[in-house]
Length: 150
Image: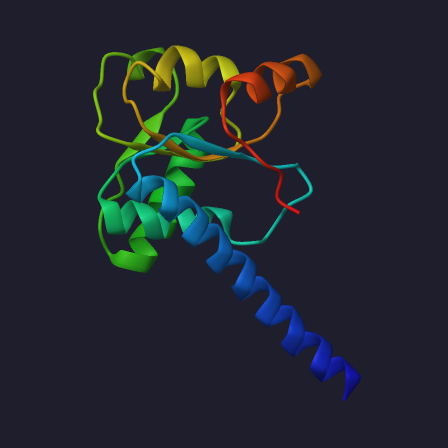
């Protein structure tokens, strides 16, 4: 009985965390404000990527990813969910020069990539940011509204 209760509570906990992320990011999208949620590397499996895919579908905006492999993974997941093609921006030199109304940001993109590639593309960036290293974290805290996922 306790095991069943534990599994039930765990599934509810996951769903609440995912919905919390969804509404938090949606708030900043609706208010047209840049917001990067600073997350630790320990926050796995709480629905971050799924939330970005939902928001990308709802608001028809591209998702920035750190590399080609991440982009392919997101495209496949999006196709499974919506049977449509996801607009992906791989944050590298070839992405420079594009203009978008808003960009959703997947975790793993560096502070340097955000400033040199994504910021010139758009005024609104919403998503997740993992700290690259301690000095990067201090720069990040000064420039962006942030908070840790508890």
